[in-house]
Amino acid sequence: MSTIVILGRYDCPRVNHLQSFIEELVSKVKGFPNVQPMLCFETEFEARREELLKENLDFLKFKQSPIIYFKGENNKKTLIGSLEEFQKYAVETYMIHDTRKTEDFEEETQKKLAHFLETNGNKYVFLEFSIDAEKLEKVIIELFNNKCPQTSSNF
Image 1 (tube, one colour):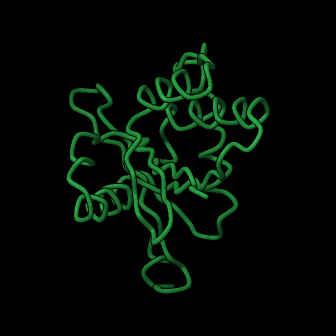
Image 2 (cartoon, rainbow, N blue to C red):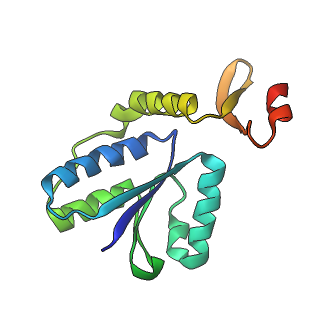
């Protein structure tokens, strides 16, 4: 049996939107495939996407989180695509429409990210970039205390 794999970023509301929709599908569709979330931060997301590209260039079309695919026998990967492609797949396969809006998952995403950062055992530092008081981006840096304790403590 195939598994649906969700490659996504912890900080992506689209991932939480998708997971909510999948929960609905699991509750309504008997025999819905297993789901394997692979959530990570941006650099790991890009590295995993690069690995997928080595196997199948169809993954090139999808650069943003989440990327959804089937993993079947012999680890064969069949691309579904983005959240929107998964929504089309759900309509075509199960005749179930997703009525949610991604913007409704922004707050939940921030709460889940904060919970993950608090409970995974590593420390984090944040860098915020701005130009003339306009915030551009916040970067999360994970400190691996168990591998580099002295460097981690310097932060």
